[in-house]
Image 1 (cartoon, rainbow, N blue to C red):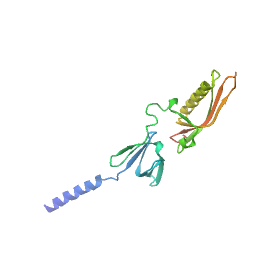
Image 2: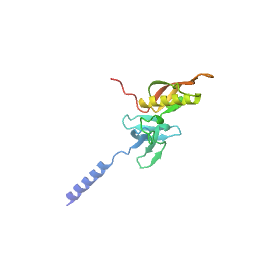
Image 3: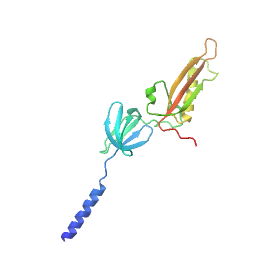
Image 4: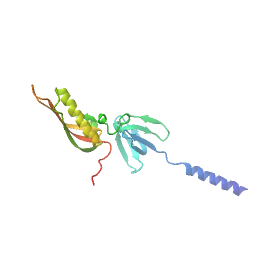
Length: 179
């Protein structure tokens, strides 16, 4: 009788010990990527966490985070998803910027340039035309930001206005290696 009770108690304690796993926090980036790990600290500019894969402390800028799901079930929201309302290929989702800090921590995908069409009647429409061309090229490359390196208006009085943009496309994922 004692042996049966002892055997049942050992089996139950083994099941309880087996069911306990290490609690893991999950970080979800605005790109949709999930990163498991243990969040160490949250500051106004970054989140420090210990990666489950590497075991090292890593920093993620808060502007790249959508939300953090803690092991105890608490959810902390940071930003909206990058492609919540628009698809990846929609050029309207691409952001043109001249601020280097906006693309910090993102991956450079390549250089592009765009020039406005000859049908522009004024400088504003020439800039808008070049901007849309730039966004469409960046969207085709899978980019979400373009860091502008050249922003030039050409044309004077009684000339056809032209606008030229040059820049570097940045995305959330590293570029695919060409084979």
